[in-house]
Image 1 (tube, one colour):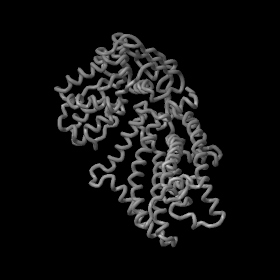
Image 2 (tube, one colour; image 1 turned 90 degrees about the horizontal axis):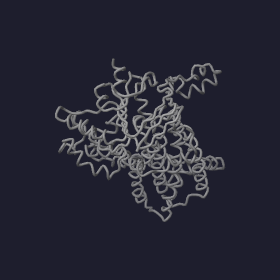
Image 3 (cartoon, helix red, strand yellow; image 1 turned 120 degrees about the horizontal axis):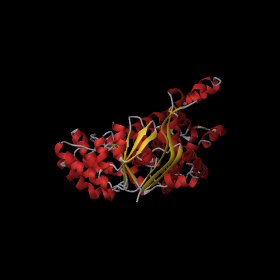
Length: 266
Length: 246
């Protein structure tokens, strides 16, 4: 029953047209279902996020005493990206557990369920990100040419999130306390990562080390910096690319070892 | 051409009790000197299939009989590729389609048309294939205008008709079923029966678990009798059914 590394990669991970279209249909269905029979539908995503950012911007702008011109767009981009990342990771824990009925009935590659999750959350992200131009406009700023770097940044972010979810989903199917543990960890990361507060607030070498040794910071900054008209640091690119390569090698090895047991665990 | 070969296949389900399933206790057991680990360690298992051997050839219509818990459903799931056996080898030539639960994926909030797409995709049909057969499905189900209404407005009979119609549009090489599908009122039953029969005829290999001797004798040309995860008898329907149902 032991398969080779590449075999697992080809059979399960490399995206076939069929499981891509299934992931697309199911992911879209998830969103549609959530807002079925509501008159504004998925627009609620945008509205909720706007309300939250406005409230947080006003309060925390005051607390940190930062000019809204800088803080508002920074917070908006950060919160939107953080929302995406944290939802992917916490829902990622439940991906296989929630797909139990399908896993036990159909020999669909499990990776399809991960694609479904990614697609669903990308749809949500796309609803939320439309707030940003308005906020930039409101504080008298606009996009710069650097914004184009959002594309490679987002791709690197996705590649990294997928390997994390692959491991989390498998682990959580076996150990049912894991989702709770992960939840707590995500919460802690939220506070130590500069999302609500700006880098500048934390001065000195200790602050610098704390921020730059945090992989989540680099992942967020890869997308956030271009949105705000800045270049992500080359350190961020190096760290995240390395993470992607090593992470995927570990994830495939891990998945190869345990994928045959997932149907028995869920 | 399709064929299925099982060589010394065993499938066992690990039973994680509440304690051993939690990581917390694994950590705890280390810190408390392994006391908790002792009863958590020997994970109990239920062996659902035990050293099963057979070959199904093209054209065979295989009936699975046996009491509840004898391993029929597990065997069907091992055939569909859901369960990888802990021991032994399974070699399957041809694409398997499982009609074990025809309502899987059906969502009451969506319209009949949307459900055709969802259910069809789960069965492995492409978008084009689904598009091509949508009209035929609507006609067969006699749902008319209802096809554009959410499924929660359907009667349960209507929902089943739709699930049945979509599930039977496939072109199966190997068809797996848990009980013969039959849906609808007296009127519809005849139509459904005919469609089901066509589907069975089209498939290269059919494997069906059933508790009905009549059904088995009608459809199958070979029967496996399972008991406690072993094959108790394997042969022509008359002999095996005669032994089992007597």
